Image (cartoon, rainbow, N blue to C red):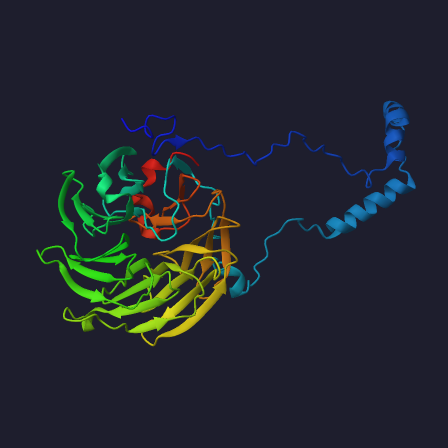
Length: 438
């Protein structure tokens, strides 16, 4: 048995989260103190002492001047002389603007700032250029710990081990689910890429011969698996073909840290340790010679791993720079111009867009090691999510886009209910069954 698994900490071991009860109960009840300013104490004293005797002896009532004044003012106030009612309905015309209900304002967004679940990740690799976490469309989370790939099924919170690669491959450097949610691509330090059928727990094939160093980033585009290597090369692999390499992109001079296909599947964004972001157009790709980039962005001053395409605005890309840059930039990939830039104050490791709102989430390193929710296009900071104690290297979101999972060098996996789902889907929330800790 692996000595790592025989220790007191196991992969996906859940931690108990204690949430402090911030509500306070006040047991002090208010006393009712009547207002005695309108009372005639002289008349009250008289009635208690002499009034009863006079009534018994049939002596006419003697009304003090203060009592007379009180009755006079009471009559004037109630208009008793004219015998009118105190409360009477009067048919008055009410302005239209008073009758119409006030406009309903949008309910205030409540953003939970505390994660609701924590799982242990013992011996997780702390490497900025790797991509070791991904959540598939079948609602299964994949995470690589050293040379082993583990699975966590969000439908029933069960865990399993998919594969432990051999010593000749070293450790796992990247993971990516295929769009079908059944096939998983595993990038290795040996420069090979394995394709697994998770339902059958079976390796289908190994892609090799294209890279000369480890494969740190992966991205699917239908049956095309794009691989980014530490050798700076980017390859398009058609997994249906025996000769799987169909396109080669050359432009990075150092390792490729991030790869993302656009929602239209026509543009590919790549970020590297050379501080450069490239945009590649699939329509002009060529298998005969390395394809030239469509756009080259050189404004970042550190490695670029964080890449995310906007799901609702075509040709809008967000990129984040690491230590020494710490900026999130927005690009129009149609014109090749920068639209926005914000200094976050800490290295940017990952960026995720909200699928239902105009906002995005970023994860960061030292000194805050936090997640930040931003509003777009104002780039205003909406919330800061704290809990990790080391840089938040990996981040992914559930298939419905509501739950975000982050993994950090502190060897913990944290679940956040940060994104709000569409209103029509609230009654059919597919992931409510594992929101066990609030």
